[in-house]
Amino acid sequence: MSRASAVRRIGLVVLAANVVLAAAKGWVWLGTGSLAVGSEAANSLVDAVYATVVLAGLYLTTQPPDSEHPHGHERIEPFVALAIALGIFLTGGTVLFQSVSAILSDTVTATESPTAIAVLGGAALVKAGLYRYSLSASNTHDSPALAATALDNRNDVLTAGAALFGVLGARFGVPLLDPLAAALVSVGILYTGVEVVRDNVPYLVGGAPSETLQRRILRRALAHPDVEGAHDVIAHYVGPEIDVSLHIEVEGDRTLREAHAIESAVVESIRALERVDDVFVHIDPKELGEWKRDPTTDRLVRGTDERPDDEPKVDGGRG
Image: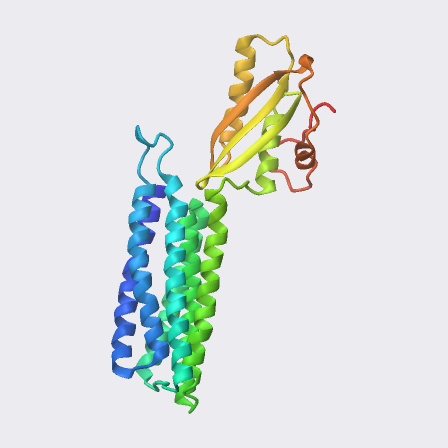
């Protein structure tokens, strides 16, 4: 299945699950008045709303390139993830406000309903399944939006569990556990929002990928037999994809055709790495002395991470 079809399918599954859970929790809340159950109903309702936004965003990100977007639309995806973060913050703030208000006003409404216990337990199981499903898909397709969705579903497992704890507390004669559980849930919700923002900001501000990937990029360039050295290696995110630029040194007596062939081979080798989009290679004739010591390049090439089989051991060039 293509990446586009996979992410759309996951968006539909998450949307359908949240609609069903919001309806079930809302029905139980109307019958019991439990704050913990009500906060969970609100959580699922917000989840359903933002799942609709996510689905629309994923539809846009999986559209093919066109004249106005020659690199495709995947760079929209971090914005989709931030929309998820906004929904998470809204939910967390609402639950915290309701919980603190109930505790301060001494108007705790709890329930001992077996139906509430069953619905919250079932919700936790459903969300655990969605978390594993979304996480696996985000790893397979390297999708920031699906990674954010997975984090939100993990968060919902905790919220449902905390709400269940509150309902059970009321059943054993401690109704105050209901709003306390909801307040604890809100803290977890807000922290998840921070995680989503933290994970996606680098995609929007041109952050660098991991040093492991930078090292693989450099070694791909230096693995070419005609490349004598490399410097000014820059890799940065443009949306969820990575653009790379670097200088390589070759013998100055190469013909234009030979230099072009070397450049093309290096570009294709680096571009074969997952999530790398554009690669720009500048060729320096070795004899002109334009090579300069690059501490970042030296550090990367001397790294100790395990090399894939297709990346032979190389050195950093002259120096």
